[in-house]
Image (cartoon, rainbow, N blue to C red; front, side, top):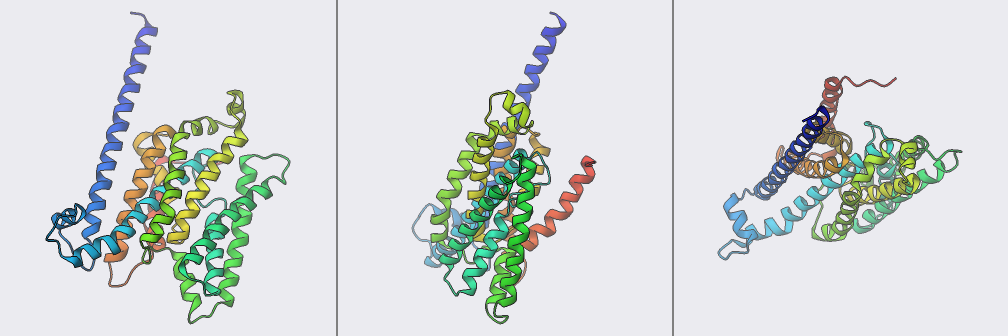
Length: 348
């Protein structure tokens, strides 16, 4: 057997070992998600044992009505929402990092969070109900990304860098508008509501919210997973991707559109929750490497588990409820600093 044959066999073994590791990691994370989901249903002011939780989910008789009400009317919608929102922010963050070839990019890079925040602030000041607040947040979140695309088209070259710069412009503009809304808001009534919404929370999530946003989020995540292998191509650079026959502009637009829709759907329900789309993809890379065929599914599951755990902490750590945005920042910033220190990353 020649050297080339030995190298070929070694490469096949490494590929097979890599696939086996990926499937084991995916299985372990999915099982962890199932356990955390089940345990979360029993955690709270009214503690419910796991066996009773399982019996309630299986609709077995002789379960107290209060247990059913707590699980199905209060905790299950919130836990499902946390799962979907964590998954959506993580996969969109990983997708954006691949599209823009930048590890410091998150799911909010094109202004969707600041746009949604402005929309929610306007609706709150106008005294609208929660449904209209969510609708305004979703609409303005999408509008902010559309504005980023519009500004980027003013440049001579429609590169990823020009789109990122446009996103920074739009984010800053809507952030200024949010500050304006805070300034004119009633300090005793609407201002606290705006501030609390901007910090992120799942305290008011109900079954209707889940039914309204779940189809959008699931469809968007499914679309990203179906084209995840193409992110590997676009992450190599525009010239290389075009040489392989890929329509870079169209593919980038599709990925950004799917990521934006699921991010806007998540933000309109939970408010602004930062650091998930930035940090979780890096955790996924530590487990399975930079291949987006593996990274996107792994990031999706990790994000769901992470936000579930953070939400459990938020609603049980103190007598009040801690906003999710505070906890994700407190956890995410030192962890991200550790990642940078460990990888010794530098940009010239």
